[in-house]
Image (cartoon, rainbow, N blue to C red; front, top):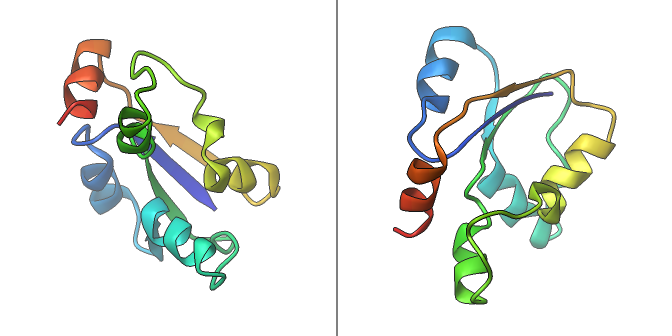
Length: 105
């Protein structure tokens, strides 16, 4: 699997449109299916869109810091990385100010 990781609106979809023709899944889709017992992790060859702010809403609701956190707190991402099926990861970055602004929306 290929992971494309970025915060909201940083260019993940644009990168995918320009560089990938195959199966695309979103972390939200797999996390929801996994919680319902329908899916484990994306299959080999899948491109998985992972939004770095995926946990921001839950953290905000629990009154936890949005300044920093361990992305491996997300069980889906941790399982994907430990599975041995990640062939490559593309990380698209944004400034701390942009991340905090997007996390608070």
